[in-house]
Image (cartoon, rainbow, N blue to C red):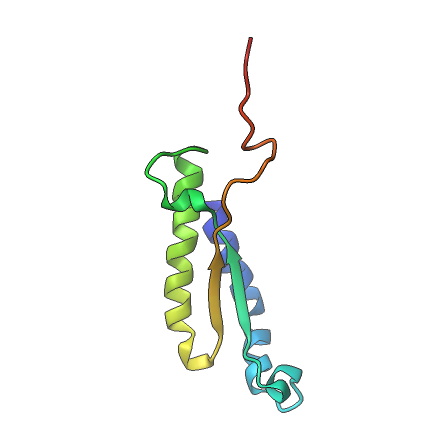
Length: 101
């Protein structure tokens, strides 16, 4: 579940900085009325019942979405907003239909 652990440890690495953005008197975010934010990337594959890119991929992207839900609730007292983007399919090598002869 590299997708979900990467999100968790990235947030953990920046948590002190995100908190300082909301509390430090010299913080530009505090002066402009903007709160600290953390945005993770998941996939539309997390919502599908068919594992288009595989079970592990869909499961790990669903784990990211659930982790973001928990983090967004847990970080409310610190005024740190946590959101998740779930892009859909776009033309790439990963989404291309491959024909094997």
